[in-house]
Amino acid sequence: MEQPVLLQRVSHLSHEPNPALVEHAKQRAESVQNRIADRITTFAGSMAFVYIHIVWFGCWIGFGVEKYPFGLLTMIVSLEAIFLSTFVMISQNRADAKRQVVADLQWRTVQEEDKQNLQLLDLSNQILDLTKAVHAYAAARAEGA
Image (cartoon, rainbow, N blue to C red; front, side, top):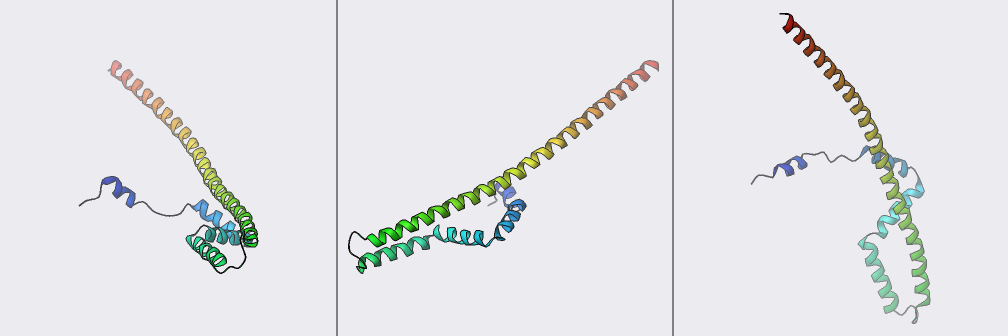
């Protein structure tokens, strides 16, 4: 069975990354702090992170590391939450920076296209003027003949 035409067109599109984002990622990777933050946010946003915490909390409570109401566990979890919220903000800032890179690139593209459109409009007007001149010349020759 043949693929629909739109699907064929989409499947032939290149899956190359945006060059502006590639450059942004290279600049970001130059900083050790950024690389560490990226790895932490990647891990903290994974199911492995969830599973480790399920096992950790289960063992903590199951082996009776401390008695209810689990004051030390509560403090550890609270500190972890503080740090993780900071890493969430770092991740959001990173995403915002990527969106800004793309927006800046799109704005430059719009400006360049606007210049090209003005040039094309000018050329179209010149062609129109030449067409009118040729038409007037042909009409004048036709009357004189």
